Image (cartoon, rainbow, N blue to C red; front, side, top):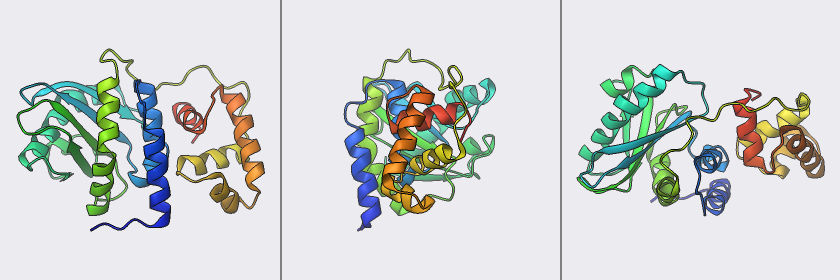
Length: 236
């Protein structure tokens, strides 16, 4: 039995609350870059839709790392189907796949954590987290099990003909200050305003003010969008 500590409970609640009603690719990406990252840190998420026969029908690649076209094509055409097959062979339970597996060798990733909603030979969705900082353990597998319904529904609601990336838009109206970036980096790690304030030795109100200014500079309306915008612009 996995017992969550107070901070993990808070991250989980935030993730669940913000995961309700995901309908677009960008929303799904932004959601996975918030408190989700505190529970399941990763660089790449492969989101796979399976057809009625349980074979790969469509693959979305959500990535905070910069990937070239060849790598993206490889992830979608080769790595995703191979990871799905390994997961299906593991009785459809959360599966950890190591770099010794041929599917991961070419990616340079050390581990993948894979889980999905489908029964073997049936339609559904499968998600693979790559680029995790350490080998996933039972705790991370449990988090993925808890959050799977939100991933599943978000992917099914998303138009198949979604755009291909989270590239940078226009440049911000001015450079972000060092303190503004420090605040956003804490938010990226899943911290609350109060936690960021303690880390930086400032008040929670000052953190809020830094965030509001950052929103205006970046042209965004919330924390998750601000973090995603900074990642796209390679500011964090």
